[in-house]
Length: 387
Image 1: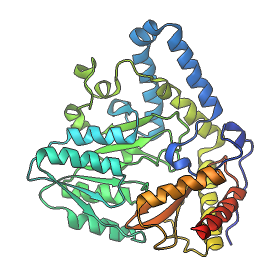
Image 2: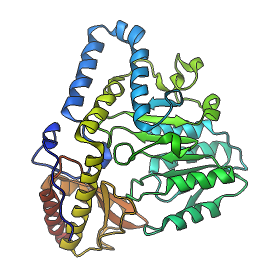
Image 3: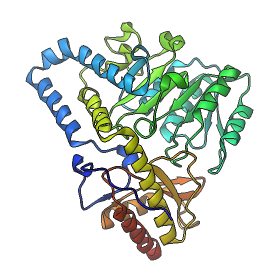
Image 4: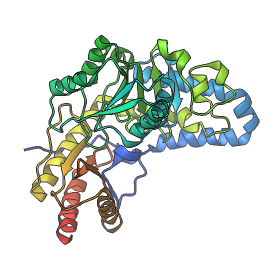
């Protein structure tokens, strides 16, 4: 029997989540703690007090300070780290920077995030390169995943993109083994770690991927629009930002970071989010969230007489539940059902349509409590029965 974890003292009071809403989808957009909101507000007030001083004389130093703090949290070299708005932007920068010809191919899995694949597909379409999608079963072992990706590699392979934690299916990929295997084959790897910072311990330098990208606004308590792109030194001169700015000649990371008159205050407040995570105890937060997600998965599955989904190879704060087969026939049907549940029952969930099967993905964060998952089970049971 899986028991819920004990709540972390005073953790729930750090967030401004509507108490009438069971917000079980932290994984999509995150939630910014109140102390971090306050820091961002202070930077915005500073910006508005004297925009000329802020943008002409202060912003570059402030961003550099934030970059150093974030790189330290990620185990990355600040000189090889650029701050970007989100992981999708970082992936597009990589797609535009890796040279491709019509003889080349790029490998992805069928768990990859949609817009990341679209960006790679667009880059390949311009050059005539091929995108190869490798299917990975939900219950695939680490050995099977590595073998499947190795078997897809050919002399034409110029890049392999793999998620650390997959967004549609909440599956942890063995990225350390994949990066090592591709290194032996001479294939550059892009690790989409959108969900990793804050949910898992991260050491980007030790991982050794050619390109690593991750969001800070999901599980590291940063304001939205805060992510990082980390590269290996050999790619520094090849990185091309998707938008040219006055810092273009400065090279990476400045050429990627500077986007003229933008709101950089989320980046500047991101170190405060890391501080909140450390004050709560990063290990305690991870353990609490993983245990609560496992509890929620179990009680919802039992209440709905559903399979609990594949076991998690690594404890994480997101879990997957399959909905009854055949009940939804398209992603649009599932989205309408998700929105109906949200509006009528004040229950926020991620629902994904993958391999013609509908899934619910639940998240757990320190502001959640066990009763919300019981409420989720009751609501889903009622709503599914009514279909």
